[in-house]
Length: 369
Image (cartoon, rainbow, N blue to C red):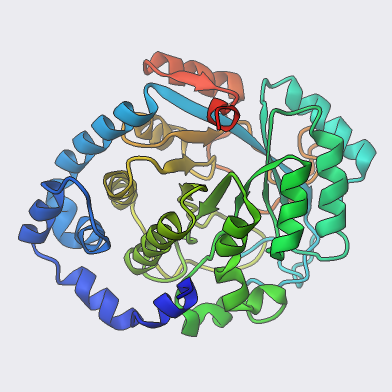
């Protein structure tokens, strides 16, 4: 059974009712469990778990220190292109938005590399809009060839691909792929993705399975916090993680927590997750899976990110630009969304060290397999 079939066996409304009906006894049972089930995860993200946040945070901190030590992995996104054939109503790259479009050529990419290397990064995340011709497979092949001698670790967050394409990119040195489902509510999915290849719910959903088959080192999962009820979408993300780690156990996994940020367009979030609730969600994931990487980007404020260093987050970006060419040249009309934590990588590193942690610029785990 693939994950799509598993997802079909879970009714969205019934799942929501189940989460919201969890009791304090369910929460206590989950907190006392040595190995949590997906039903325990429901309890930990439920409203009933709110009074237990301090205990959840303490357990999350302990488990994170035991598995990852006092380290925070550092990475930086390099936006290669904001050209996109999709019509996602929440995104600044929406094909219908009136913004300047740019896809970096090799000269411009190397200008970005020069600026990024000065910041100290060895882990580079390549990001593009979803344009199959201008920023698709062949463009990414050429870009990875160009960049692999400059960075120790290359990841991508781009349009989904077929298994054989992923195999070829992995063979060129691609380490990790981040692919976010945005929402698992299939009946509502096309409201947010009305046209374009991204409107194919199932093809996007099955991307992590193709990555497992292609031998990718790590796969990043997540939902966009602000579309549908965050608790329900987060449960299905956890269900997805549980399925993948059982069926593609050679692959490592990462969870991200993107909250909608201001961008070109007028979309307003349908579901709001507060800072306290986001802390609850992050701690719930750590209790659910001691080994999963938990990542928090510059979408979040400096103050909030500093707090989460102690509570379960293991990976952070810093000094991020969400526009193509944004490190060598600034042009805010090209950006996907506005960042919140505008500190330099050096400032973030210093704050991490002040908290008693080490900022790590290279993922050594990938070299020990």
